[in-house]
Every structure is written in C-alpha cells, then in structure tokens.
Length: 637
Image (cartoon, rainbow, N blue to C red; front, side):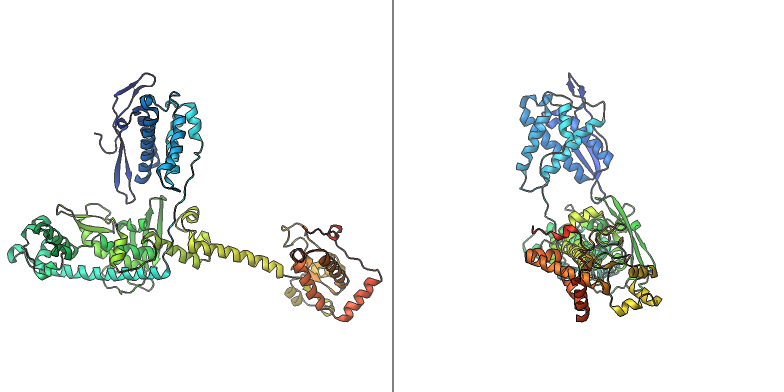
C-alpha cells in the first residue's frame, strides 16, 4: 500500500503497442472545506479496461495536484472516471483490456459520446451532475494533449476538445430568511449563548470546589467534575466507578430516555460522563449559536466564520479585525469590525449584556472564552476558535474542530418555527438582502466579498432581484420622464428686453452673454424655436449636431421660445391638427403626444392680441412653416 501523498506504481501489465503500462493504486491528498487533509484513492485494476483507467488516473492525480483542488472537486472527477471506465467495460466487453487513449482501435470517441448520452438517465430531470461529469471527463482527456510523450488518438482529441452537448441543468437556490425569522434566530442564539455561559461557569466553580473522588466517593458531582477537569480519572474508568442508581444531581445529566428505557449500566455511565463533560466544555450543539451570530453580524459565509483561528483574530481599541479564508473562492478577506459603543478591549473583560445586539467583537470574546479550556488541550497551532469536546463510543475524550452538523435539530430544539428549509446559508442571504436594500441595489457595493458573477448566479434572486430590478426600472423611467417633461424656456416680450442687462439674470437663466447675443441675432434659430446649444442635444451624442430639430424642439430643455416664434408655432399647431386627423389616436400620441401637449401649454401663455397679430402676419404670406420636407408625409405603421 502506498503511503499518504504518494502514488503507487505496479508494472504488471505489458501492452505490445504501448509497452509496460503502470497499473496500481493512485491516490491524492486534498484539503476539505475545513482545511483537513483527505486521501482519495483509485485502483485501475478493478476495471477490465485497466490500461485506460490507469491513463485517466494519472491525469486525475496530476490535475488535482497542479490545480490544488479541494476534496469535493477531486471526488467528482474520480466519480466521472469510474463511471466512464465501467461504461467502457460494458460497451467493449472482451475488447475492454485493449482500450487506451492513444489507440484508434477500439475507437473511444464513439464510446465517450455514447456514455454522455446515457448519463442523464441516471439522475433526476434537471440535475447538474450529468453535465458536470461529462465536462470533468473531457478535462482529463484534454490534458493528454499537453504532453507530447503521451499519445492521444486524433479523433478522440477532436471530440474531447469540443463542448459536450448535455444540458447543464438547474439548481434550486435558497431564499433568504424573512426579517421575522432572522430576528428569531438571532434572539434564540443569544439565549443559547447565555445558557452556555451560565452552565460552564457553574461547572468550573463546582470543579474548583471538588477533590479526588477516590477520597470522598464516586457520587459527588463536584468531585467527578474535578477529576475530569484535572485529568485525574479517565472517562472510561469513571463509567466503571460511578455506582448506580445515580443520585438526583447526577441523574439530571443523563437523558430521560436513557434513564427510563432500562439501558445497561455501561450505557448509562457513558451518557453520565458525557453530561459531566458538557458542564466543562462546549459541544458541537453549543457552537451553532456562535455561528448564527457571527454570520448575521459579519455577513460572511458559514465556511469563513467556522474556519477562524487564534491567528485570524486581532482585537483593537475600537473592535476586532478578522482574517477570513474562503476556500471555495480561494480568497482571503481581512475586515475590521467596530464596536457599537466604546467597549473596552481589555483582555480580562468578562461581563456582556445578554441582549440581541450583533457586535462582532463581543461575540468573538464570548466564543474565545467558552473554548479557552479546549484550546489548552488542542495539540495543533494555531487552534481554531470553533472547538468542541466529544466523547467517543469507546469513552475517550477528544478535542477537535466543530463540525456543526444537524443545524435543523438545533433550530427544532430552540423551539423555532422557521418558514422553509432550516439552512444556515439562508442567513447569509438575509444579510445580502439587507445590504441590497441599504445600497439601493448597486451590485458593485453588494458583492463586496465575492465576485460579481457569483452574486448574479447565487444571490440575485428573490427580494434582492426585485430590489435590483425595481431600482433599474425606476431609474430608467425617471430618466425618460425627466427628458419628456424638460420642455423649452418660454420668454415673453418683457423678459426678452431684459436679457443681457444684468449678469445675475443671465446666470439664473443658464446663459452666457455670447449666447444671449446669438439669440438676438437669430444665429441659434432652429425653426419653431431657438436653441441654447445645438451641439449639446439630449437626443444626440455630445458634440454632434442635433438630429431631431426642429420637430422635437418643443420637448427639449435647450429650446428657447421668443415672441418672434409665435407665427411658426401657430403654423406648427396647424400641421399637428392635420396629422391628428390622418393618424390613429394611438399612433399620433406615440409620435406627437408630448410635443402637442407642450405646444398647447406654450400657446396658452400668449395673449389673444399676440395670436391675432401673428395670424395676420401668416395670412399676408410673409411666413411659412420651417420643417423638413420628410415631415410632411406621415405613414401609420
């Protein structure tokens, strides 16, 4: 058997074309989500296509080593490799031993395509597994092309280099907790932490008051706690020494079902010792409350929070600085969290207010206090913050990282009635939703601790999606509404005479002296109106001459309407009246509705005498409507 971290080679198979083929167990050492090393093995000899399995296994080992993939990825590639080799054994039957990535006969490209077509039938409809396994297998085959000394059949190389045709499937993303459920979780976690502090404090006080049980008997609770706290008696020995039936103070540490269902003394002794250890050290169940509080307070993933170590925590005068590692994204986040008030950073502070306030520094202090005795017993450095004490079935006390399983059971024990699946990851999404609301849906601000693409695929849904889409729609509507309602500036005869007299008036109107002079000379004349700057049109790119004048001037904020424009405006009104009779109401409203409304508002500001004089001027034939020729022909599409 090969040692950990090594590959075991066995030259047992001789191929006439390829020479000696290395057949034997391959293995890789990969870190899991908690950083612990895991050993994965693959034995090609369990397949009839040993040569093919050995070739793919070599690529699998090298790929995992080069890319430093985690255990989950290595296991998924190994699963695809096993399924493919088993399919090859079934398809090729007696010719399976001849199968090789370098041979053209038998043709593995045909087998690969057949295997991919058969994959979806093995998983539920919409599963992501078939597409992922097919992609993983093609990754391993494509790696052969990077090594000139390793043969790869040309037809197989062409097929593997292409994308597979399987659907990638869909995943059901988790929705966030409601604000009510989140508040209930946080409150329950604070209550659980308070109970844990009281339990551990009472347990150590009794242990300090105890003595060796051999001197006073094996029935006193303080003596038993003292023996376990000082390692004077092993848990296994204690299960044999404690007499039964138990005294009431000891019987209260044993679960009710164990006491009443006639369990053997050995089983009752095991549960008694476990109950005694729980008076001194936090167990796995106790750590759920701290994780809930830290996820809700920091907004980071459960993986980052539960992976904190002593070196990752630095208390400051105003709070705490945390270094959190996200293995899946291969990112390290260093964030400082300030206290809500000026909480003292002195190390001997032990009193905390039992109220549901999310303050990261206070939560971390309580966690470090609770697990301090376990860190003294832990044999690695730096020690994790989430440490648990556990009693093995063989009655050995162990200290290890908190695995934090069965979160749903903790929720049930706390008496919470949550809507939907009790999953801790939903709490992180709740924080993301609150951030989306606070930042108004700006994705660059919300996706601050991971890639924006990850946010789109895993978080931009539910309330967050509605918030972002609503923000975008509202912004777009407001932009177009502002353009539609930003009509021209109407100037009467008195205001026209006063233009240019004083600088404050010009500044208030947004005009320069040069622009006023151009308005007077008619240099900015656009037809039915004048224009402050034809090269700064809201309907064209900056710097380009306005492409919609004069037909859209009455909808433009740059337009200036002087008394001299009244004849043109009356002619334009007549033009719109003719169009109104030729076009359908819906079509006219779409093309000219806003222009007609603005024009009616402008004409309403002119006196009847001014309109009569302008009509007389038109009747004399001195004025004609200045609009493009193309605008005189309308087609109702």
